[in-house]
Each structure stands twice: as structure tokens, then as C-alpha cells.
Length: 441
Image (tube, rainbow, N blue to C red):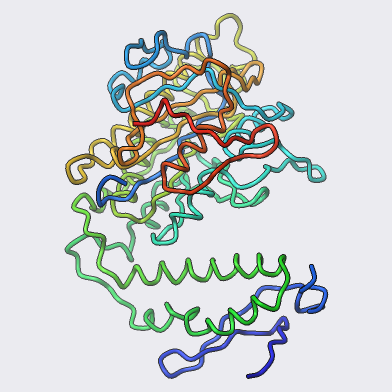
């Protein structure tokens, strides 16, 4: 057996179908100095996790309901949720525990990534991956899309972080998203497959070089092992997607190809947020129902967005700071956003799965980047949960924290609901090892 001496041109080699195959390697410290490197659910349906995010917060005095438990009264800003009240839990009184050092950034960092922003030169970076990607790392390997990131606001970047600095781009063009999800390679149940005969030779390359993989991993240091793991995970993700193209569609009766979307151009400079939400929700629902993905984030609008809503004289973010008094236009905008969130939830509730619905097998976490936009506060943080996540969550109530609890508890609660054996979540003051038992079934 020849010793392994990886170089920049090194491939791991094996035999597949009688032919030699190879998998290229990333750059490794081992290539430069090997010695130094060595030293250095309740039923058969899957559970899904959805993150719904909107920018610029809410108005706390018109957001928090009165009463707790199931006997509570929706607040003014939550009135648009009346039609889905039975599906939603309102969580209030919780706070981001990370330092509030970055307007519109500290909140998402502290909640979605569990810790403080970090300074890296002139850039602000998150302390780690966001909760959707932590979940996707565990449950996304057996689906076509490890995670899916979509947006309603045109060009919204999203905050789905794979690493502190690496962001998954969100797709905001309905036509492009439709082609990606339901284009030529998509087959609904009962449709004839279109199979590329070369796929079967491509999908098991890593298996063919498994001996070399094990030998190489035993010879490299910790940093190189991490690089190799990331590299081989990417290759395996691609192979799994290829393999799914050869398989029959999932045996899910709800899986159908949605109607192809049209164009939703702004009207008088005002984007059609409600219409866009509806069409994006339809595609998101079918992607989940067809088991293309089990982790989805919908970036309704970005932090600091200046969307011009119907009836508003200025953009959203500007109004949160400049509108005087009790900010009636900002109040109207928040209610419009909640109406669109209700539309999203209703689309999932309308998809039948077994004896329940797609929403019954999904857990939705909805939140924003701040509490009150005017002062960038991150206490009294806005949190909504929807769905039952396969019987794990108990919707239809208002949970009011009695002690300004760490909102990281909600992220940990959702991760454990997706089956992760995650004992804790977060960093520094944002770290927690507790869930919010009051929202559980």
C-alpha cells in the first residue's frame, strides 16, 4: 500500500463500475508540512423547521397580548392572526442577552446565533452558525436541499449563516425559485421519471474512495480534519441530490407541482409584499410537502429595510425613527406584516398530510431584528411560534416570561423539537441549557 503524501494535485482514487474514479482535495496544512499538521416525530411524516423573519421590529405597547395561557386577548398588532390563533403561540417578555452593540444586528446575532457580534477588522460577524443551519446540519442530509432560503423583499440578503461570515443567499425572484424547485428535474407522484444514465456512476464516488478517506483523516491534524469534513460533506450533499433524482418521488399525497408564478412588479414604487408572500408561501409549502427540504427560512424583509408600503409616506425604517407620536403608520405596517405571516401559516395549514396537515408536522419560528425600531431595543423581543412540529409544540396560547428570560431558550427548544441532541445553545451571556417547557405539548 502506497503512503499518502497529499499535494495540491492529489486525488483520492478508487474503482467504481470497473473504472478508476477520483475525488479532489481542498488545500490542507498537511500538504505543506505533514509533521506540523499532525501535531496541531409522532407519525411517519418528517418534522420541518421554518424561520420567518421580518425587519424593523414592532411597537411593544401594541404588540403584547393581555392574559396568558389559552385565555388571552390578541393585541392590536396581532389582530391579523385571529384567523390562525389556534395555530400560534405568542411568546413575550423574553430578551436577547448579548450586548446591544450593533443596531439591527445584535438582536439576530444574539437570538439566531446565540451570542454577541464580533469585530473582524471593519466587519461585524456572528458568533457562529444560525439556528436554522445548526438544524440543517443534522436533518438536511437526506433531502434534495439541505436547507432552502427564500425572500419576499426583492434582493433581501437573509441572515442564514453557515459560519460566522458565510451567508446562504436567499432567492427573491418567484420565477427563478419555481424553476429551481419545480423545473425540469422535478417529478410529482405518478409522473414518468427522466433519468440521466450517467447519474448512477456519479453518485457513489465517495464510497469508492472510502479507504483513502479513512487513511488520510488518520494522518492529518485537527484543522485539516475540519477542512476535509466540510469538503466531503459538500460532495456527499451533491451525491445525495443526484441520488434523489433517480428515486421515485416521496410517497406524499400532498406533493404537487404548484402553478408557475407570474410577474409581481412594484406598483407606483411600492412592492406587492402580500401577493409575493402568497406565491412564495405556495412554493415553500410544496417544497416541504414534497420533502425537497426540511429546513426553510423565509426572509420577509431585511433589517433596516425601507420598503414603501401602501398608504405610507416614507420607507419603513425611516418611519420607525422619524414618525412622531405613537407612530400610526409604523403600526399599520406591522399589522400588514402580521397579515402576511398569517397567509404563510394558512398555506401550510391547507396542505393535508395523513390525519393532519403540513403545519401539524412543522414548527415555525417568527421573529425580527429588534423590539422597538425607534430605540433598537432587544428586550421584550418579538417571538411567534406556529404549528405543532409533529406533536412537540402546543399552539394556541400566550406565554409571558416572568423574568425576562434568555430568548436563546426558544432556539434550543426548536432545535430539540427537530430531534437534535443539543444540550445547550449559544455563547457567553447568550448561552443556555434550558428549553421553554411552557410551549411544549
